Each structure stands twice: as structure tokens, then as C-alpha cells.
Image (tube, rainbow, N blue to C red; front, side, top):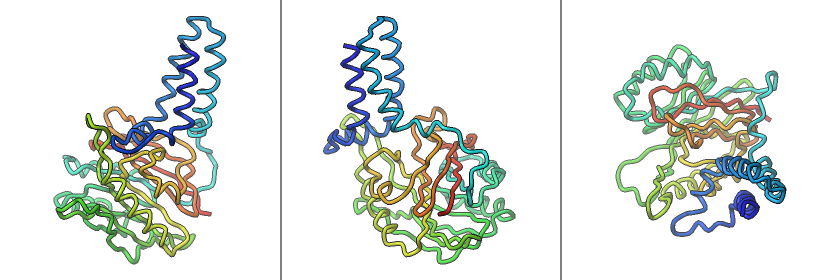
Length: 301
């Protein structure tokens, strides 16, 4: 039985795309927590050692190899002297945050080149603008998302990524051009609709629709180099984000689990790039939001 469970675990890891995603979206739910299958492998290993089962131990080589292939690279340390051109921070600051002052100072203290924020509310926006102004003289805000930059920004505009089923006012995406020393970069900041785990399955249709709209917009982007920062409400393994992950590079090193902040289970705060590499991503200390900030290094190609 242990050998059978080991083979099944390996099968789910390697063939997760074959799990149907119609109706309850079981495929996306599985892919959201796919890295945690490593715990199942550890548990099976312990049982196999306890039972002294050579067959089970041999079978465990399959899920160990599958997990290592999918996620082993993320565990490698970031190169201490590796080349990178930009440091960026992505953070959903929470529209219920009671400490925007502390949040702004904490993000500024990390000294990134770019800071992308979501869930900016009218009462907190002036606080972020004031505290970040000294180190980040350039910024653009559209709706509830914004980008602060050490480099000049031009052509900042709203992105239409609103799903058709949302009737109320909704503005959660922007596109701007960052004029870096290495050249112009198109920067996108987005906050995709939330997903919910219910008895009927994973409710992610609005998120998936919004990801599709964003993916089409990025595909049409004329600038070669693109950076996407956002609370995408999905992991990079989730097929619901395929319109983005199929077009952009994701982090090469680091798990950077970001949500929920109290006990992070998944990284739904993402940094992706086109014609550039996200060489490393890591979480930053909690700010009082229900998300952790994430910091990423970007190497321009």
C-alpha cells in the first residue's frame, strides 16, 4: 500500500495538468498546493522506514524525483554575487491596514528600485505618497493599485482587466513605462479577483477571466522587456494563470510563500518578467497586512 501511495503521489505531481478543471476546478485547487506534496513524500518515507519495506522505499524514488524536478531548484540559495539590474517589491497592503505609515517605511527601508502596491484606499494613499516621496519621486496610481519608482515613469495608464460579471466600479490594473539606465521597461501592476475555496470547489472564474485579459494585453505590448508585479490570487503552478505564465518568466529561486501572512501556505503575490529573468524572490517581514511583501531581483536580458 505504501508503494501504491508513492506511485499515486508521483502521478499527481507529474500529471497534475491531466486532473480535470471543469466544474469544481479540482485541477487548480491541486496545483495551488502542489509543493506541499513534499510533506506526503516525507510521511511516506517515515512509514516505509518504520515498516522496513524495500519495495516502498524503491517506489518513493518516483515522487522524490518528481518533486525535486518541479521544485528543487527553488530551494537553491540565491547567488551572492549574481548579476541583477533591478530590485522590486510587491505588496498587497490590505484595505483594512491600520498602519500605512509603518508599512510605507518598512517597504522603503528595503531600498528596492520599484514598489508595487495593491488595495490602496483613498484615506491611506496620501500617507504612502508622502512617506515614499523622498526615495521614490516618481509614482503612478490607477484605482487601487500603484507603482513607486526611483526611475522616471511615463505613459501611465489604466488597464481594463475587469471581468464582465463584476457590475460595481472596479479598477485594479495599470501599465507604465520605467525609464531605467538599461532602457525602457513596460511595468504592469495588477490585482486579480479573489478566489474562494467552497464546498462546491474552487471559485476562480473571475480570476481566470481577468488573467486572460491581462495576458492578451501583455502579449500585445510593444516594448520588449516587461515586468508584472501583482497580487494575482494564484500560484505559478495554477493553470488559471497560464495566460501569464505561458508568456513570462517566473522566479528561478525562492518559494516566498506570501499568504496568509499569519501562516503562509502559498505565494499568490507574483513577480514575472518577459525578456528578463526573475533570479530570486523572498518574503519580507510582515507589515500588518494579511499578505507578506515579496522582494525579487531582476536580471535584464
